[in-house]
Image 1 (cartoon, rainbow, N blue to C red):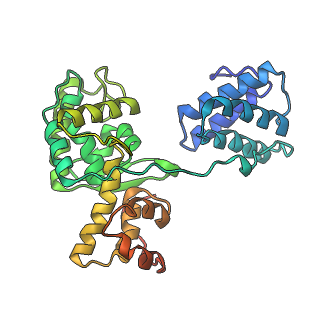
Image 2 (cartoon, one colour):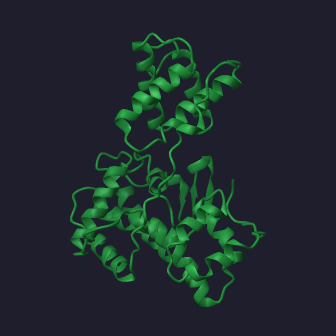
Length: 318
């Protein structure tokens, strides 16, 4: 079987590799898209050996159109490693020298006033689509629970347990899962959204948040809705520098928690592992990136990062 339509000499191997990744919980379309480009490149050049010349030849050609983004290289590198494990010991694994340094976008630091005005506008959003009643809930999960945009988009109705008051984020970044307890206010917001969605779509929807056709909402649509609400709220846009975006709610969640703990005199060092676990980070270092943007936190940053982290989170699940 060749469900993805591969045509090169590596068709069988690429299909087997994708089947393996799906069994591990990785279903990303981006991986398939780039591997189909690699497959077409190999077919056009009649390449039959997964060697350095084949892999780096495709990478070089791909770089001409991909700009500075190189995250797609991990796909072809992973194929090489998988082939070696399968007994193809001569398969080439793309060298790390092709990796580009990670340049993270600077977050837009949301103010309390901007957040209040944003959610007030979201509650009055003029739209014919489900975003009319979904917008407040969607962005509340990013603001009040620090969830990633993709995690909110992929939520199934079954993963949102309003009676018990928690959300199960399943197989997220790094194939990790976690359970997030919800506050009473967040439960109320989600319950209002669920009531309307259940009435409009009955049991036909596969996701908690859906499009007008009942399908999963796209990342591009989330950005468009965010911008629409921002402008409807009459919030100004910076003339230069980072523009506000949905992901800034997740940044705000991180540093707002730290600032609150500092104001309360709570031991931030002891709390950071719990924050990392709640946000779905594999390491404390990932959490530092989010909280370093807090002006009040910078003075204490060096002291905290120099201490050994010994407190482990006990909530959630793997």
